[in-house]
Image 1 (cartoon, rainbow, N blue to C red):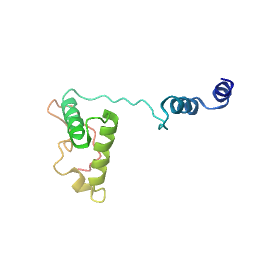
Image 2: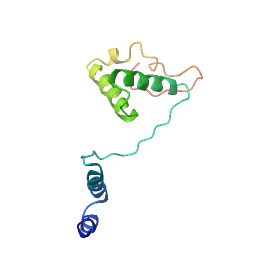
Image 3: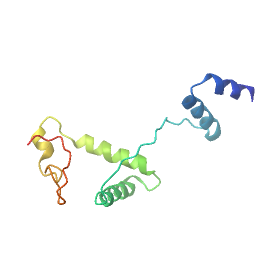
Image 4: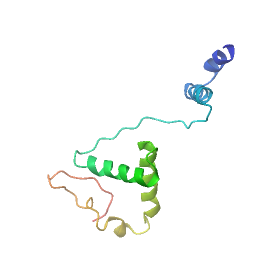
Length: 110
């Protein structure tokens, strides 16, 4: 007990949490942070379908954050940042407005 009190007083909070989790689960864990993002309602089915597809490919025992990381890693692996024109061709997000007339952000040069 005294050892844990000493650790609690001497370690940064995040490091102490990792030590406790390691003691309880018997394995090392990676530090994490809560992240949120807002989406248009029309975007949600696309994101959900991508996560469901990744689950079928990688195994349904994976949590959504791992599946989302894999989707992003796959996207980055196929990204060609050398040619800016290629990056935007065929993308529905290349247009500066959507069907409702709202402006969309994009990094493409037109």
